[in-house]
Every structure is written in C-alpha cells, then in structure tokens.
Length: 149
Image (cartoon, rainbow, N blue to C red; front, side, top):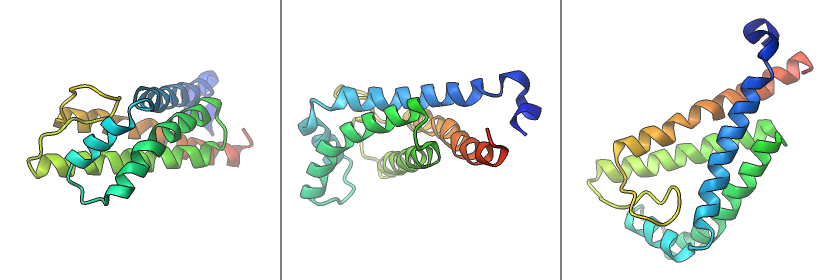
C-alpha cells in the first residue's frame, strides 16, 4: 500500500519524519538538561496550577525523557508507541502554551532551553507543525505492520 502511494521512495518519508521529529525532541531535551531550575521557573511562570513538587519533577525528568524519545524516534524503535508519545507530548505543550496566551500571560516558551524566546501564536504553530510528522508516523507504523513492511 505504501509503495502504491509513494512509489520507490516509500521508505524515505518515514525516515525523514523520524529524523526530523527525533532530532527536535533530542535537541529540545539537550538544551534544557543542564538548566532544571530555569525550566521550573518557566513552567511556574505559565501559571498552570501545578504543585511545586510536580513542577520540580517535570523540570528534572522532561529533558532526559525528550532526549530518550528522540533517540527512539531516530532509531525507529517501538515506533508505534514512541510516535504516539511524541504526539501526546506535543499536544500537551500546545495546550499549555495556548492556555497561557489566551489568559494573557507573557512568559518564555522554554521549548528549546533557556533563553528569552517569548511565547507567541507562532510558537504554538511551530509546535503544532511537529504534530504532522508524529501523526504520520503513528499511521505509518501501523499500516506498515499490516503490509508486512
């Protein structure tokens, strides 16, 4: 089925999607991993109503988790699950950023580490665009199992 849709290059599309999405997650985690207190401050500034202990846990656990998820996506390991997790994580990020903007809160995104990247609707759109390869990989990983690919 994939070959009919994409021809001889059917294998390149999921590879590019994996490399793009995995690279984004790995880079995002790597840029944040040495700065958990800055990430915690960014999460707190979003005023999501999360308890302090949860914010601290997220600030410490999220960067290595993002890096590991990136490695799994790039390697194509457990692709059905890793692409679902990537899509869910992106969805959570988009909801948090959108909520912040709708409530008129001006804080940094925290998407790619420390820095003064303010959250804008373009930030939400950028993060939202990464859902496309995540959803594609969810679909592809399931359909390729059916095709025996």
